[in-house]
Image (tube, rainbow, N blue to C red; front, side, top):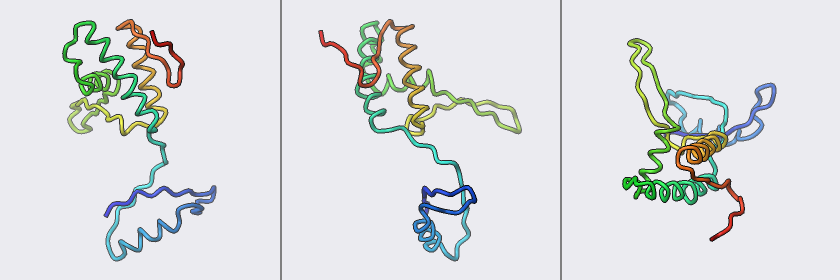
Amino acid sequence: MKANLIIQVDQQGKVIAGRRKLIQALQALSGQRLVLTIEKYKRKRTSPQNRYLHGVVFPMLQDRLIELGWKEAVSIEWVKDLMKYQFLKMETANEKTGEVITSIRATSSLTTSEMMDFIADIQQWSAETLELYIPDPNEQTELI
């Protein structure tokens, strides 16, 4: 059993929120050896951010890329992969050998601020590279 619990502690380290769920999880695993990982809570990307990315940004990019001759862009997934490759690459080095591998972060792993940065990077890149203006979320645009 794996449990992700969000708890809140005060300045003295006392659990002030989520205590009951923490106790229940520990009781459910009583008698077993456990690995407990504690990390600072980071708010994941929001549903509105994700809807904006998939409903506005990627379709606009797709249309412009197709217009410019990129026939591979017929798939939203291809456009998404292109943007992830462009802006979410991560290099990791092997501590023993020094070998470096490149991986691509999933958008589902982004925090709200990382998602905002990802979208801003795409907006800037599309303006500079594709001459395409992508409006901010909730920005009023005129239909022609």
